[in-house]
Structure formats: structure tokens, C-alpha cells
Length: 265
Image (cartoon, rainbow, N blue to C red; front, top):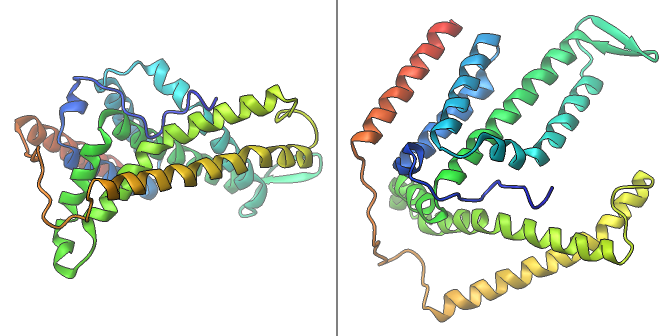
């Protein structure tokens, strides 16, 4: 499962989504996430699902690959759904299971939260699959450029985001290697009581943290050896610029948002 985890990975390609300006993609995803968390009706979720499905197809990344890569997320969605069903106690009782009341409002809220969570993960995953970490760094730095006037460390923030995205797959690969090494020594993560499983995770987490700190230290030393001094005076080999396809994509996104608000009024 860890090996198929693809959040933070980049898949090279020449699709329309790949060739869009990264600033436009970040802005569209940001607006999309806001709209997702303000949606309440079935029609609104249907439109948002259609947009996410179309965006996935336009990346030309096989749909099976995307679904397989999101497999670890399904466990989080399932846990979120169950917690909302069990902890939300508003509205009328819909059904009782072994004497435990399940409220109608809890089911509705659980479905909404689960759908929002899925759409959020899907769209951010499409962003990272179709955009290189360097392009995301440049886009974030460009979008936050006005904050430099108040001495906000825009370049450093963008660099931290880029490094974080870059090392998510690396950490997952290391976690997979450590878990296989521990399993070969007789450590079982999948069977036994919950308490035993939690204790079995400790030999996995400790080496992972040690490797992460060691990698961070090596990266810091490498940056210092190359004379990194922050964003002041730095130049770029590739300047971001909007092209015709970006304006068309932006217009289509605005049109989709207009249709969305018309259908949800």
C-alpha cells in the first residue's frame, strides 16, 4: 500500500493539464477547495465530481493508476465516515444497531465530509501529478510576491513547500523498506490486538524519524556547501508566463463556476 501512495509524486507528460501555468492550477485548486467546503446540495457535488473527473482525464494519466494511488486514502475516508456516524447525535433516529442509535443527520454529515475529503485529496493529487515541485515553488513564490513588501520570507516558504512535496514519496518508500525489514524479523503489523499493533508500529516510526532527520541534515549541509543564502539576488532560468491555453482554461473554469452557482441557487 505504501508503494502505491502517490500524493506528492510527479508523472511526466504532455497533456493540457501538464502544460498549464502552475500559478493558474494552484489558484483553480484553491478556489475549488473553497467551493467544496461550502457545498451542501447533491447537484453541487455532482458538478464538482464532474469537474474532478474531467480534470483527471485531461491529465492523460490512467484512471486505474489514480484510483490505485488513492487506495491508502480510502481508509482515512472510511474512518472519518464511521466517526461522524458514531459521534454526531442530532436530528431524528434513523435506525438502531444492537441498541445503538444511528441518527439521520449523522449519516448526511458523514457522507458530506467523506465526499469533501475525497475531492480535496483528488484535486491536490492531480496538481502534484501534473506539476513539478520546481514549478510549484516558482508559482507559490510568484503568487506571494506582494508579501515581500512587508518582509515576508516568500522564497523560503516556497522552498520549504517544494522540499516537503519532493520528500513525501521518498519517506513513503523508506517506510515501506523499514516495514518489510521488520516483517522479515518476525514483526507483525496486521494481526493481533489493537494494543499490540500500536506497539509494533514503534519500531517502524523510530527509524523513519531518524532517517528523516539525517536526510534533512544532509540536505542542509549540501545547500550550505553550494552557497545558498536565501532568495535575495537569485535569478530564474525559466520565467513563468501566461499563454493562450492558460487564458482559455481560466475562462472555462470561470464558466464552470458560473454554471455551478446557477445550479445551486
